[in-house]
Length: 188
Image (cartoon, rainbow, N blue to C red):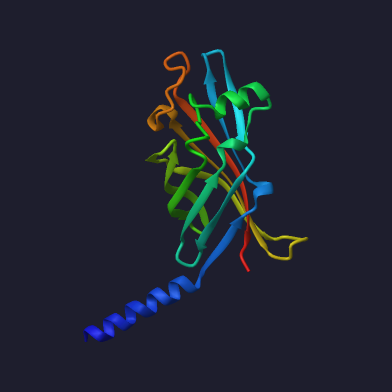
């Protein structure tokens, strides 16, 4: 009887993974952006120009994962002096921490649509849970690539001080709003 249950479990695992699809992040259409307080008088907005990774979606079982890498050296405020300052030791310290990662452990669905991701952000060598809210999701057959492409907009909020980025506190508030536009191409 136990062998029968083991075979059934293995079959279930095999069929579950058969529905999973992997999508490769399109770096020319994916830009994590953020806004952070500037001494209480305005918000500085910036983005990262280099992102890579993959997303695994299992629509049949309504789950998935993601593995994203961001190059903090690609930070872009639209202000050269601020870009250089942000790359330095007091903020992103790109010399010691050349990568920011997000490991999405579970993608949650509402019906057939992904709506949230439970995962961990690693920045400055510190890993903390940062849940993402997916506000828009759509897949299409790309007219030029002739493959499925999925896009999403996601957002999150966290305190940079939780990751050891304490520069300017308390004059600068620690809260950061993250917004991500992402497009990913179905892997062949």
